[in-house]
Length: 89
Image (cartoon, rainbow, N blue to C red):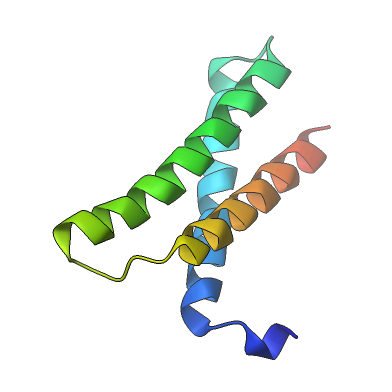
């Protein structure tokens, strides 16, 4: 199953992990007393950034638009957020 995943999806997945880690750390730093709010905002940013990046590729013609790339980034982003949450708590 894992070997059937296209290499570009893995790239989006790993970039998503980094994005989730950085954004979750930033959210926790900016809103230390509001963990759930910070996490919800970060999830919204991960989804938005992942999709807007694909939309940008479609509009400009620079790159390849594929919704599954955004999904791979979102999955990676959620994993990155989870890593931060588990490490912090």
